[in-house]
Length: 118
Image 1 (cartoon, helix red, strand yellow):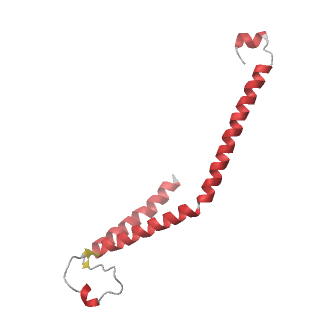
Image 2 (cartoon, rainbow, N blue to C red; image 1 turned 180 degrees about the vertical axis):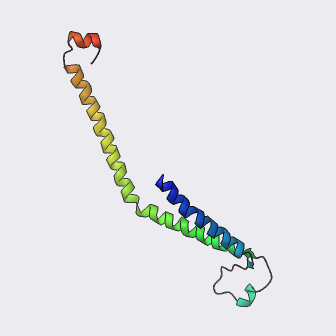
């Protein structure tokens, strides 16, 4: 419950901020991917992109790069967890087998047969 409240307290203002940035930055800008290009060539008329789109794309690329870097950095933790899960599964199966053989080796009494406890 607290996580939902904190999530809403963070998510709502962040969303409102992003909407305000989009509304305030609607003028068109020219995006140039050539850092060595002529400045006059960038001033030529052509297609423009709203500034908030450029900002959101840069934000999205940053989030994706950060997520990818984190995913690679935590690879050894995931690998170790997978190893211990496999180990726990094997031990659980071994324990089930031992319990099964123990039940088969112990003689049943008449009461156990009647009540079908074992």
